[in-house]
Length: 114
Image (cartoon, rainbow, N blue to C red; front, side, top):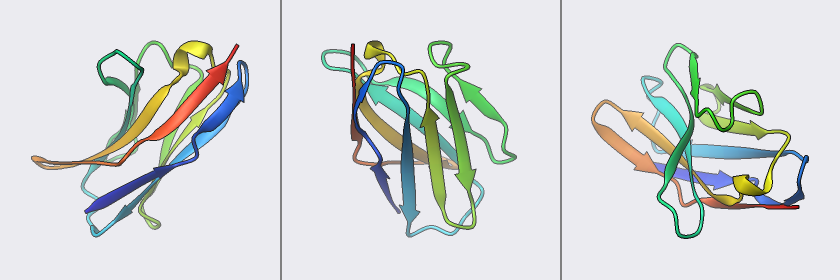
């Protein structure tokens, strides 16, 4: 199973970006997709996840600004990020959990300028 994250870039504060995570090598829909981020000098932190039935969970810091979604037919997950803040600057990683197996993508850089 491989995950490829894309869509990062440089954006001004208040702007938007949409991250994508393409999953290959797995056709199972019985999985949880998530997004995490890691800022320089900090630990990787949870951002959002979408469960098998489509329900979502968000970190308090992104609630109301970020939206996670998935397209099972395309084996894709997305993170729509609005009202971006400089503190959202980080490398964003997608994660797929299938039972006890965990898979990570390579990360995509998001930089928000003030």
